[in-house]
Length: 296
Image (cartoon, rainbow, N blue to C red; front, top):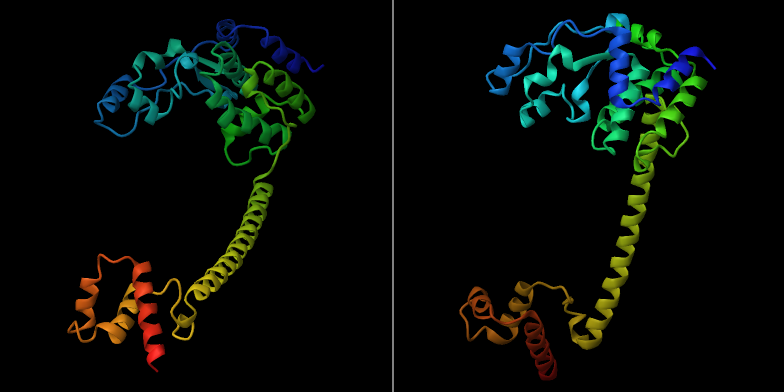
């Protein structure tokens, strides 16, 4: 087994606290706070919109900075979380920081998730560290644009096979409900985009089929209702009166057939008929139509 891989595997037997101490001994502590205290306090008071960072970054050495208190707090470096939760500056002092390479960072978060039963550690693990490892080492897409990323890539480098072996072992540290049950594979942005496009076309086709089916069903239902309606009111068919004819149309015909002498106009009849339900109006209209038919 690759010595680097073996070293990573040995870390999995440590507690979170033990691993933090191991990393402090390996890389040393931070020489500066994560944020500038004065800027941080002003940000908490909403006097400024961003926080000035301290000079603690060591990405030039291929190392990431990790907040030790991430086993008790979520998203400690996130401005929105800082403001919403009013995280104290003491969480960001240099003695609360530790450095690690990318795989060590993953293991730190896995140990946090293990010891807190998934309450902490997973957001960084799932949304930032794990995807980066998959892209860099499983997908073999070495970062090209940013020098610090290139350095971090080289610092923690494992082959795709070794990466999968380590990820499989680290995965077992996580609470069972968060463990990855799928094969470890890399899907490129291009493939994701293609799959999303294909899925979109499939959904659109399914939706189109669904809407067409709905249209056909509605036509059938309308035809059945129309048959039932004309079975009950056969004389309405020639007059183009249907089950969904408007009240206004029905009342207008009633006015012409039966109420033109009682009301000055159709609007007055409409007002008078407001309390009358549509079914009753249809019955009145049909009676008027039938009476007229008998008189002819």
